[in-house]
Length: 311
Image (cartoon, helix red, strand yellow):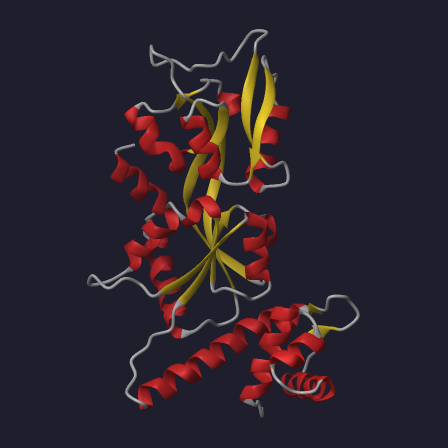
């Protein structure tokens, strides 16, 4: 197979910009020449990489997988050239993660796999769950730390189970340490709500729709950000359904308390690490192999997190 480096760089630019004209400008060549180079790449690999019938263009399923391969080929070349020039530079591992996971569980995961006091070299994209899923599907990251996403629990993806978290309602306590809002009765209760289209919002809506709700909730804030809802709960502005890993310190100290003990208002969510089955660069493959061995021996990231906090 005869692949030119510039073809790979062209393809990655096109995959990012989703427009032949803009990608050609970015690569500083004419659009016809750019189009011919993409065609040459497709002929070399033996399949179409780009669906030209959509606006903006989309990658084909093969193109999404090849995007990961192209990134890794260029990275390996850069690292090899650097070594020849006496420059020591390892390849960073690209993570995408849901907002709340990126500031709570991902740092713990990185610490767990870092060795000899040397922090694992990483790049982290903290985005909405659905966008993080898209990043993996489009070959734009090595690993995705997220929840149980059915679309990723089948080929061409694989995953490791890192544990479970509970989604529970919390609020500020009153002077007696009890929830400051009633969970029964005629009073309206302010609700700090996830955006309905967000992953957590769909989970909360599912919990409430499946149970008999004895109070009238009135939405006072809506956001896809767990930390923002938590901060508003700490200010006493309402009730929020939050994953327990995000509020374990506040629950332990009594800054926040469970709003209700109703079992049907508590849900379980699985935490998983995903990748696609295309071979990644060496560092990413070694990390996956190590985590796979740990998981096979019974290790779970969530248990480590809870044990550290005393929960």
